[in-house]
Amino acid sequence: MNSTKKFLLTAVTCLVAPLAFADQEQPAAKEMPKDTPKFEELDKDANGGISAVEATNTWLAESFSKADANQDGNVTKDEYEDATG
Image 1: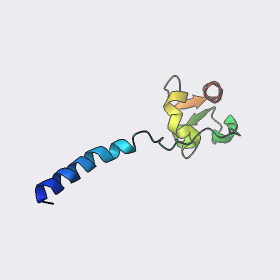
Image 2: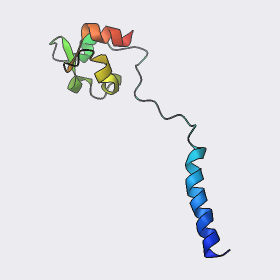
Image 3: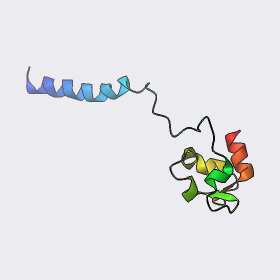
Image 4: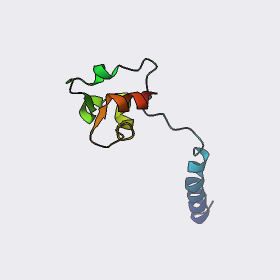
């Protein structure tokens, strides 16, 4: 096989290969646990809101801005209950 054919074969392979994996599901972000922690467990400083720092390494961290409906930087108990259904 000459070098032009090798190059074209390699180029086509590189362009087509990602399509083979396009339908695969991406790993889920941290999902809400079946036993959702109580609001008070995440509100570590007991100030009535869960901050982004308090939500770190929890399922809430990845959906924090969605749960923080008024975008004030804290998830209140009502916002938490809305987010957890």
